[in-house]
Amino acid sequence: MADSSVTITHDGTGKSVQLPTREGTAGTPVIDIGSLNKSFGHFTLDPGFVATASCESKITYLDGSAGLLQYRGYPIEQLAEQCDYLEVCYLLLNGELPNGDQKSEFDHIIRTHTMIHESLRGFFDGFHYDAHPMAMMTGVIGSLSAFYHDSLDINDPGQRMITAQRIIAKLPTIAAAAYKHSVGQPFMYPRNDLSYTGNLLHMMYAVPAADYEVDPIAEKALDVLFTLHADHEQNASTSTVRLAGSSGTNPFGAIAAGTACLWGPAHGGANEAVLRMLDEIGDVSRIDKYIAKAKDKNDSFRLMGFGHRVYKNFDPRARIIKKIAHEVLATYGNDPRMELAMKLEEIALVDEYFVERSLYPNVDFYSGIIYRALGIPLEMLTVMFAIGRSVGWISHWQEMVSGKMRIGRPRQLYTGEVQRDVPAIKKR
Image (tube, rainbow, N blue to C red; front, side, top):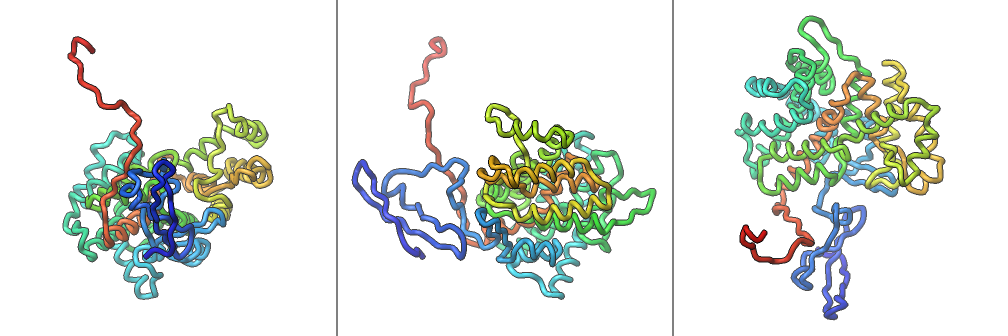
């Protein structure tokens, strides 16, 4: 129901139309432009959809000006400190945090669904030894519908939940298999007695010839990182999942589409770009030179990990992740990149150029350093992001298909050739 309305008048015709506005429980109100084309014969133009609400959602709220991020109303700071990743998964999927019994049951379901079909494991043999892990992830996730087609009825709430649980449970197994394939080691089967992140570490780093003990510091660090990455409103990959899913395609196909979108360097590949930038700077003594390059509009160099498309204040996830970085490096040894990162942050928080442009460190600034300290190679960083974000993707897909789903169909402003006749080939 409309809370109020705005009136728009066409200067050329003098015709006016009243458009309803809608208020959410928090955040910026929206104008419902559904009748605009019918009334005026006009579409709206919004490249990148930066001012367009594409859907109505109850999952995640963020306020970029205030630096707030909430899952189902709970601040990210409280969730990262007091809950583990699977509790956050339950919250995103179901709307409420689990009680003790619900948590135990959900943990059991996820732990006992981590294995993948043996034939699916054979898919990895078809990839070249140096295939990018995200290429393997995208392909294998898309193929899951060929193995788990017993629960693909998107109109059945029970089947939707089974699929959601399978995606959350099996993505670490697929990710670890992609890593093992890239290093030429045998795959390790998951273990039901390990935690979600402990199991991932085991499948990545254990080998049949020796015992492997999960480091609780690494286990906790990954758990918090996955929580911080679990959802982030209508970002590019989540919007891709929703758009793909709006056609009624199977959820594995929609998640594969989101995975492919995440692979882009402007999205999930940002933490990898931060590490490459720090390596290029190389030493604290060279920071002033690169700060000057970043300020030079004619220089192609950019400081990666600063600023955010939505946040115009400090990214709340960056504060949490900085603390984890110190804890991890205290155990795994100092990384020279950390000294560089801290110095860059120190400058950015006081330098007028950065302050005026709200270029504060974001979540990608420190996450790559943590992953590398844990021995996770550069090519696997976006894969880690995909594991954490999988629950956000499937939660948004669930929300969409359980409501009044409508296939996405953006329009365009056509600027090409107008109608012309095809000339004979001799006259072309």
